[in-house]
Length: 192
Image (cartoon, rainbow, N blue to C red):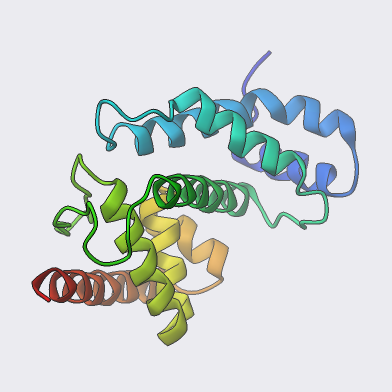
């Protein structure tokens, strides 16, 4: 069986959101492979002795997504953006459950460079980043969404623009501003 193209995935997602179970069967291998790629990306940044494994993260996200029956998927990028958000929630919930605190606790300094790369010891950093993104969402929801789609979802500028229905220039500008704001916010919290 060949892998469906992005337009075919979009059609399958639309059919699935309308209740077509056969579409879900065709989507399952594609979705699982993409979730595995996203989970591997997340887990490769975690500490080596992290007790949550890639497969467990994929399975948890997959189970939650299959229960998303009322979502009207716009396209493939929208689906994987929601998947990325779900994985982020799972990891943040896991980090919080492990006793990381909002300020202080076991957090490490978060370094945000041009690619917004997190350190290897990131469970505490993930909580701090999640808190900062929640604050940013209160100030500028679109910027927060752009960070989530670009960083957590791994979407390109073009895919992010498509999901949010804005121009690529707006995505690029907001991405730069959001990274700067997050860096300043996280760095100032570390110094307090």
